[in-house]
Length: 191
Image (spheres, rainbow, N blue to C red):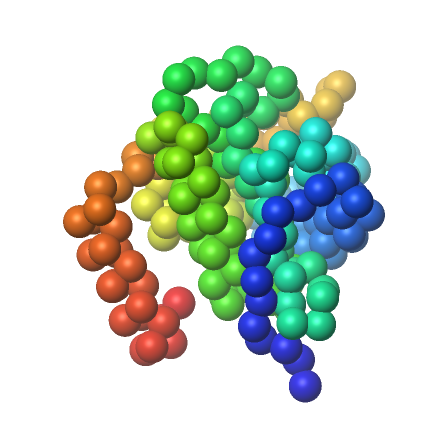
């Protein structure tokens, strides 16, 4: 029997190998429908490695199944990807992934909600992210809006076409409405 329950916990540097394994299982499968293999192959070599700085940030999370298997990951930082600058009130969604056998079970959404909760407590009021093309619908379902499409340089001579997206934190009334809607969709099997 495959476990279906999971908990979201903080990651740490001891999770490097586990996160790398998850990204290597996830990204090649979930991204292949959105990218040409010649563009994707060199990007995957860089993207499927856990980032120790993210894992030790205190704002990177793992979804762990009942049997201890890590089935999802993701987090946020104040700094933009690539060691960029921090802008007051804006956080950046970073390195989300879900094991292909665990998609459509609310894992990414649960990790995002944890990011939003912790970021809100830290004074963040907006998120930006550079979404892979295949994940744009996931972020849109969370309430992100597309700003534009751009090529992100992820290594020397390696770039990946991505969607630059923006999310404005909701007030309590909006959050309750969306939570009620999510709960209703969950009961009806729509999520």
